Each structure stands twice: as C-alpha cells, then as structure tokens.
Length: 237
Length: 279
Image (cartoon, rainbow over all chains, first blue to last red; front, side, top):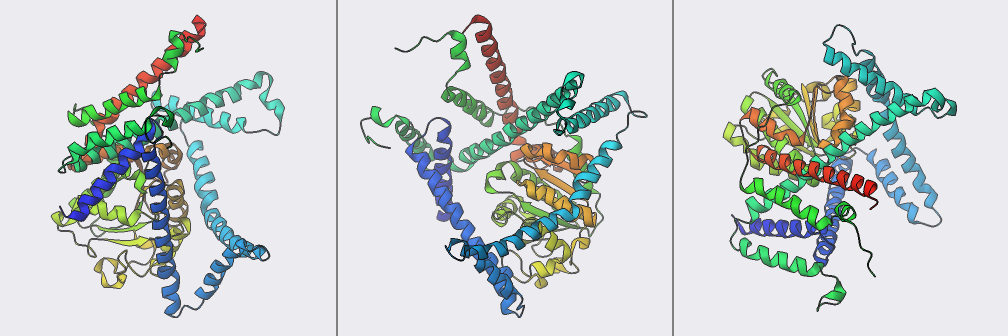
C-alpha cells in the first residue's frame, strides 16, 4: 500500500473515532474533528462550484455561446444582496431561479404525485383477490380516507361528536407510519455506524502500529471527556 | 442534598454512556465472530434483480450515483452489488451521472471495489461517468432533454465523443432503464417527475432505509418498478453471488435491532413501573 493511502486511512480512522466520541460525552477531539469536517466540506463545495462554472458556463461561453453572458450577469447580480443600496437587484435572478424550479417540478407534479397516487388507491381491489390482500387493501383505503379527513380544518364540526372517531383512526394510521419511518431511520443510522466500524476493523487496525495507537487514542478521549474543573490539566476545554 | 431516586426512576434514566456502550458491544461481537443469521431475499430485491437480468442485450442504463459520503456505508454496498450484476450479466451499457456533489468520488471508490476489468468491462466502452451535474431537478430535466447540451465531457474532463459507449446517446429516450442510488428525497422523487412521468423510463430506486416510507407510494402506483433500501444490499449480494459488506452487516443489524427492542421494552417497563408504584 502506498504512503498516501496509509495516511488517508489513518486520518479517516482517527476522525471516525473522534466524531463518534460525542455519543458518550462532548470533548475537544470531537470539536476538532467537527470543525475540520465542516471546513473540508465547505472547501470541497467551493472547488466543485468553481468547476461547475467553468464546465457549464465559461467553456460554452468561450466556444461561442454568447447567451451565457446573461447567465453570468444574473449570477453576479445575486451578490448585490450584500450591498445596502442595491440589494433589491438580487431579487431578479432569485425570482428567475425560483420560477424555473417551480415550473420544472410543477410540469409533472400533478400527474406524478396526485393523479397517479389517486388512481393507485382507487384501483385497489376488495373482491376477486385473496382474503389477506382484500383486508390489507381495506385498511389502506380506510387510513387514506381518514387521514385526508383529518386535515380538513375548515369545518371544526367535522372533528367533534360521533365523527371524532375518524380523526382518531387517522392518528393511529399516522402514528404507525411514523413508527415505520423511525424504525427505518434507526436502520439507516446503524448501517452508517457499521460502515465506519467495518472500516476501522478491516482497513485501519490491520495496519502496522494501529493496534498500539488505539488504546492511546481511547485513553486520551476518556481524559478529554472529564469535565475541565475535575481534571488536573488543562483547566479549560 | 441529592434527592434519592427510586428503582423505576433510575431504570427509566439509564445513562446514555451505558446504552451506547452496550450498543457498541452488540456491533462488535458479530463483526469479530459472525453468527450467520439467514439473509432472506425480499420480493422487491428479486424484482430489481430480474429487471436487470431480463434487459435485452445492448440496453443502455442511466445510473444516478447520487449519494453523499454519509450515506456510503448503506448505499455503497448496494451500488457495488448492482454494478457487479450489470457487468456479470454482460451486454449492457452503464452510463452514470451524479446529482450529488460527492458522487464522482464515491463512484471511483465503488469501481475500485467492483474491479470491472475482472468481467472484461472497459471504461468508455461498457461504462462511463459523465460527472456531477449541478441543479438536481434542473439537471435531470436538462439531461433528459439533451444530454450533450448539458455536458460534453465525462467526469475526468475528456470529451464524450471519444467514447464508443456514448454513440447514439442523445436524451432520455436513449435509455432503457434508470437506476438511482440516492440519499436525497429531491433526487429520488425528482426522477419520477422529470424522467418517469414524461418519458416513461422504467425506474429502479435505492434509497436510505429512512427514505423508504416516502418512496413507497410511488412504487405502489407503479412509477417505480422496484424500491430497495441500501440495507438490503446483503440480499443483492446473495443474488449476484458476490458476498461483501452487505451480507457482513446482516448479523450486526439483527443483533443491534434486537438490543433496541430490549431497550424499548425496558423503557416501557420502567415507565409503567414508575407510574403504578408512585416513583
């Protein structure tokens, strides 16, 4: 393995340990890792932003696509928001960006997110399918209708009296959905932890010296977690 | 003077250091000594596999390598397994782009894991990456309308015209399948709006497990052929017969989730114990 890769693995491993140490207690190593990550991410984004301007703006412009001059001007005008007198100019490119964004997403939103979903729900079968599918479809339809009912706030009377059972069903349905989403979130987070632990165990620890450095890193971390007033040195974190 | 707390109160308030410590142990044990829990293949993973397997020879696939570094541990193994399948299957062209800024870097990492040359696949002939294209949904719409007008180079900055794989590739109609690996809801839903709805491109979507509930309605409506989360990478590796990180994580996920179930049960016991014993 070349020296560059070794350094890369060592840095990645140390930052992984430092970042996850926040799960136990705040400490100076975590803060260092956090600030370094934010700085590195900002730097990476700036490099890509400049590269994007070069690839998608400057190169076509220098090849004769003069219309890109308008785009460059609009981009520069965005920065007038930092000027006390001409800040209002920045609203024009912003309005164009928002307009294009909404226009693009709206062109298919109605079909993709309303009509298709309504057709899908309306075409659920209650007869001619096996009992379990029919039961599942019935639950689906009841939850969809009751949740839509739940969000009708215009007529408060709809949520009172004997009709209060409908929003209650909706609440149970939504809680079940949130529970499913939360369980999936736990799964996602655990996958991330697994990925990092796997990296530490498969890529870092087999490197020469890593097994000796690991306890030192952990001891330093534990020491850094001791509140400043309770440790002999340093007295501030 | 410190107030004396009852048993239920202390049980309800276990220090997080203890909970995380136990969790860490639950992670490490199966990594050192695998238990070998079974990895059943779900219908959606099977459907995903079959969709690629049944593509006619010469089919062109658009792959959005749109996940971020934070999502790599979950989506990376899935992407690697799918690339293994594409190359193993043979006769397919895989054109990747990224709607995530870290995409090209992570694509490089994935390709190093896949090692396409072991299947005889060549860059520019069987697969390519045309780079990160900024704008998310605007990028999808632009590539769908006219790929060459959106970008004329690959992610290394080389002209697309020099690569045989790009011959005849113009717009969304040039693609037979769309595969998306993403950590962003704007991306996974944006492709439905910008490619599936206007061009009817068949769509396979792999997202973080936490995004799956949001995407399920699209699958139910038939807009997505198969929806998987990165956590199902083990199933894909099993089908493709290339065991790697996904299968390795199966034991860990099972054991750690069982521990979470125990935590929930203990939390509930403590809550009701405190309630009925008066603290």
